Image 1 (tube, helix red, strand yellow):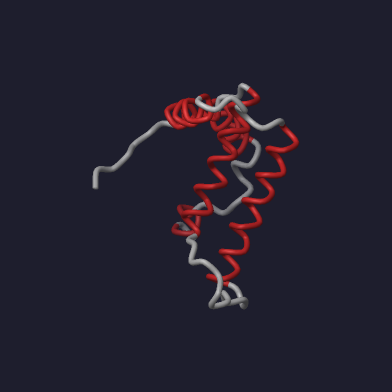
Image 2 (cartoon, rainbow, N blue to C red; image 1 turned 90 degrees about the horizontal axis):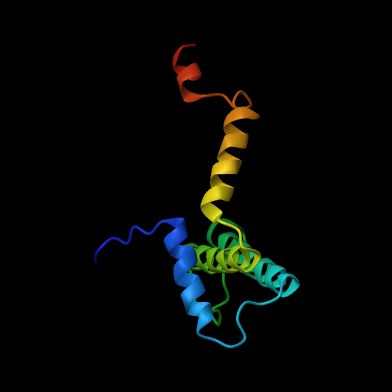
Length: 115
């Protein structure tokens, strides 16, 4: 299988083309937030089944953490597109924030090696 190296912009464009073929278009912001919450709940449930104390019932469908993360990512991309937000720009902004504001918040691996 060929590896798929899409940029975030590529992913946003792909989702936009997919949604654009339907007359309903993107959901409104509150509906989108509800979908995000629903998908986050499904991811939480899957992680709890995998790592927690609550095994799946035999009647429950098999799902994966990867699949649930993919569903959540899709809704996040939809929300960003509906709001006209570049997720690449958002990522750059948040990384800058973490690399400046939080640069000394955590113990770096190289600091451990020098002790």
